[in-house]
Image (tube, rainbow, N blue to C red; front, top):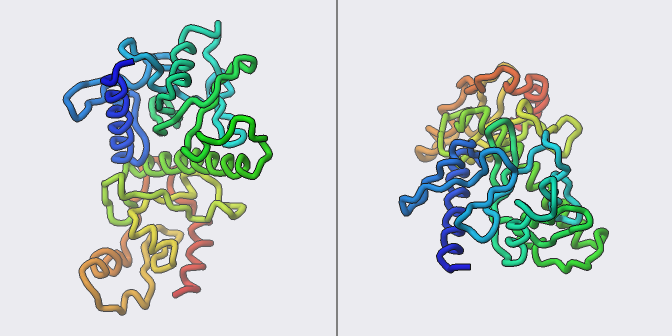
Length: 295
């Protein structure tokens, strides 16, 4: 394995992570098929039709796709590790280069399919075990999981904690990707279009019964408006009007307060193109009651 191959792999993973951040955590198949690196080289980061991408020029797999609608059971997480099924057929073929990533301890990219042609990216991800009897690889999506002892029982506290961490990471990334994509990578209040500065805010917190991880329970908000929403300095009425806390409206401060919050009072929310993705009025009404009580 050449050092230049390792350097290229690291550059690809870094570029994928940065480009995905610009789009709220997701990339399209077109993005991944024609990724332009900072050095001017264009590379492919996803196979045209298969779930494992093994570039001829690399010793090991570069990316794998997890498809919830596919024929494999590779979305299962146990003990903090993501179980990724072998490609059908023999133990070799495409599986050989993924096994090589395990042997060489090389990072890969996990592409979590959101919808046809759209993926949430996770990188770096490491192959930490090869279970031939079960025909699956184990992937670590977090450094804290990667170095846990292999013989550590699944019910050990460290494993249970790691499992919660990884499940939360996967679910939050999927929720964020769906919400920010629905709002066309813009803040629903101020229209800021920098994906790195956008969050997917829950209308009803995910710890509550109605806090489902669905787009209609989410809002694409820039970080300042997300913080204001969470602390009830800003509310959104069921008819999609932004309201600012009365005490904040009475304050005198710098331009950020004036332009970022006070001038947003009375603005209509910027809504997704698809009506099914609009914020649920009942959930907004429930949350707006909390805002009114705090005001």
